[in-house]
Image 1: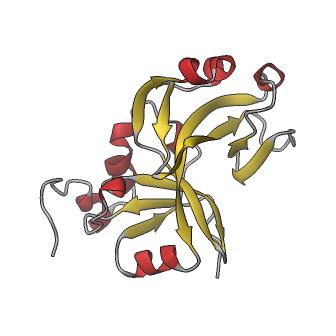
Image 2: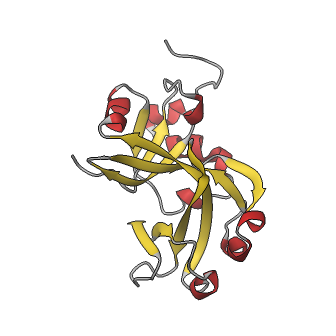
Length: 184
């Protein structure tokens, strides 16, 4: 099995789970035992400053918490984009290129010059061994390449159609699929 870590899962119109309707998920980890990701396009109205005050200056617009998924909504995963992706940094676990997770117990002041922005997710999306692969085979997800800025877009509500449109062809046409139509 080839790892899909760092790739995007884009919900197809056939996906029936309301937790994932029109979502874009960045896979943070994908191993034989399962997969873990965060939903990139579900912003809340809770400011990062209200929850992680010291980190709020590094948060990209919109500087709010995001719903990372239905699993452990009281936990937090923080994505960061490094300014200098070649230089190793304590507390940073690379996912792909300049994007990775950051340990929130590290003093954010120490990272200010190295980090180009963060996004904080409450909860995550998780799949057991083989579960994600079955969902992909059933047509619930498109697996697409991520761009470094996907996790940090200023308008997260526009991410689902944006990712589909940049694929071109029939995939771009799916970006215009009406949200109120159900597939049998």
